[in-house]
Image (cartoon, rainbow, N blue to C red; front, side, top):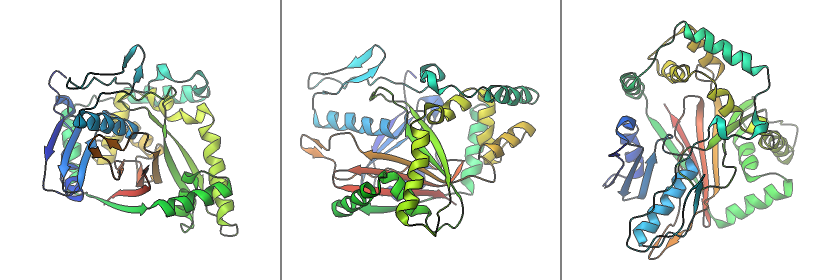
Length: 351
């Protein structure tokens, strides 16, 4: 967009009020609006559409923002094919950060779908052709207005200080599991049923620090076993996670599968969920993929320790809270991030 409508403004609203106000205002993608920033009494608040980037992208944007704010030279390097930047003389405009998305073309060779999925996807695409509809921004506007007329989100936080983080890490390490697996086990221990848990996964294969959505995801299903110790349950959860994280077929399955569905069919899934469109094919697929009545119990993104500096000249970052967006296919969306000696676990739900 030649004149992007990204914005930064000062406000008297706190973070909770900003969320309540802005969730009802869709990003004007057609006008190049992907990011909103606010100087709030609660600190700096940034909101970004997923077409602008994933959680890590937002961290890297904040790093660039803070460097520019402090007038520092930009010393980090971003890699995106032949594009890169290193330093800029103080006083000059901040360098453009390369943009990059995960696509079918840049996925690992070993991530290809098992052969039996290809005819399945072709079948869905063929069925969709009989009732295919191309959606525009008008339909997006209608769906957004209808959905948010009767919904609002709630955000809650758990803050862990240095001693609490140290305790959790020690217990997880002694049990031979990741901190994420330990936290998940704690979340599901009282559920009494098999829980469907989705996990967002960083898809960056070269550690690039570009803007753009390079997230993928996996899912695991597990029922907490009351007859076993907490540690044994955590090991089971950890094992299920590792099986998929270490296999590119599982790690990039969602990108491969969704990437081969007709684009308008993908649009229809969200519009089915919002109650603004109904089709025979799209309704069936929406139910199968979790956009219908049965959605995932938990959707978790752990940004782990924020890999950006916390000090920028006279400016510093004291704490970071990560609030992932509510999604059509999950009841409870959990965001986790650690900065300095503080970790926040955030729950974002809509009513």
